[in-house]
Length: 77
Image (cartoon, rainbow, N blue to C red; front, side):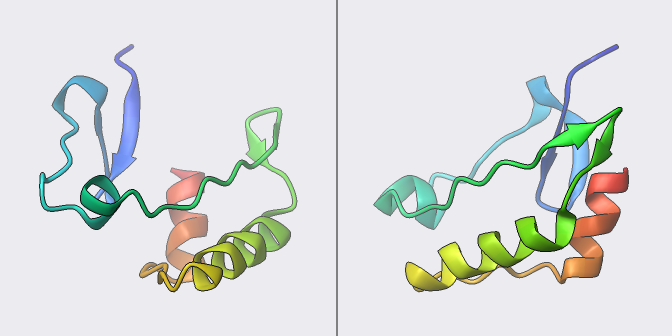
């Protein structure tokens, strides 16, 4: 099975994933790194994870465009 990555709102094969050369995170280096524990393939403490993600992004003046519901759906996929 090909490795999949989530990029621009969709799961795509890793070999096909691209980032624009104009991406702010690439050109300026701004970004948030957040991890989420999974138990038996299921995300653990999702609410706390999303709160940390948004708090960290806000601290850098960044937004997290997808809603929490959209991010949960992405995790489920």
